[in-house]
Image (cartoon, rainbow, N blue to C red):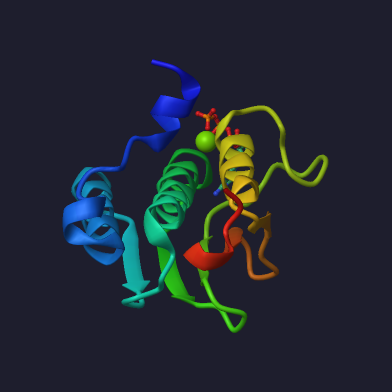
Length: 151
Ligand SMILES: Nc1ncnc2c1ncn2[C@@H]1O[C@H](COP(=O)(O)OP(=O)(O)OP(=O)(O)O)[C@@H](O)[C@H]1O
Ligand SMILES: [Mg+2]
């Protein structure tokens, strides 16, 4: 399959259950694998992101959850998806783990962070990844509403 075709594949449950339930299922998967990590998910309904926007939001949360658990040893992770003041949505994933490696700002070693950034940028959105002052990592994506996404 070409990259374009792969990029269009929808995450499990997204089209039939919607973003909130699909992300609840993702969190349930990680809770069963890592019961010691508290994972809270809050997703506003009716965000108007469209299929591509929902998929991007899901992929950001999926990669950020997996990064937090694989790299950060957190006790807690919070996922929130809220309407953005400008329309569209803000996706935020925060953990209280060890944070990004000290050298440099954002590591460029893996494909996860780069893939997320590319996917979000392709829709005209933006992505920030950084350490929180309290410790741990914060990932924040701003996604445009479906009506304003790049083609
Ligand atoms: N939540 C996090 N806590 C601590 N370190 C993180 C976190 N997220 C990312 N990192 C650091 O940033 C690096 C790059 O992340 P990225 O997702 O791009 O690659 P990866 O997870 O190492 O590999 P891949 O995603 O390709 O499987 C990680 O190797 C890790 O050092
Ligand atoms: Mg990764």
